Image (cartoon, rainbow over all chains, first blue to last red; front, top):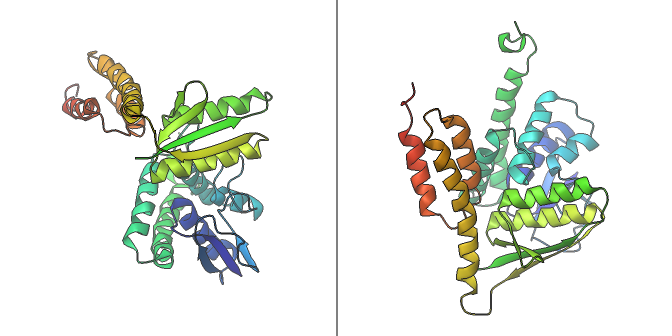
Length: 148
Length: 142
């Protein structure tokens, strides 16, 4: 399927594209349009654009919306959603120390990449790494989660 | 330099929504100007934050307009910038006061510092001193 979003990707769109390709649509093809452009290309699913289905809802980021809409129950993905929420939009309370750092890295990745496709490819590495590290901590029989 | 002006209306109920929006504005360090519009200096980040907040307000059944503007009267920029500066410096001074206590909780204070730093749009000198003061206290109570 084709997926369309605004150009100049940041933390939420990198995370969402990674999620789409890894857990929703392995054949996903991404298209970028200038910010605010209308109408959006036909036959493509849009994401992280204000007002579309896969976008921010009730103060949550697009990554969170995608998890919910596709009923992905993975606890590691839920934690990444919390981090992206805090990195991407101002929250009333923040509990994930990784959030500001992740925002900075994703902004920098876009700045250091020649285009949005390259930024997505590099961003995917960051989210693979985040997923690997967080899921290691989410294993129930790890000593630190067993309690006394 | 450009400024962002956010004007919004929310339904009176539920009041939780109004509180949520207000808390987010405070966290961003936005200033309520003349009791009418919320103001932030325009950066890539503040623009995005205000755009999403405006979208959220509309989704909650409210109305929101967002403007990018420049003051057309002389002195306007300085006055606004001074207000932003005063807001963060008040926060820094509160941390300094606590830092002087012998049992100061460095961990909690440095987190407070980081929160204020995010709203320090004009790189206050006091913030630089705050950073040095926090770092200088390391190892003292060990």
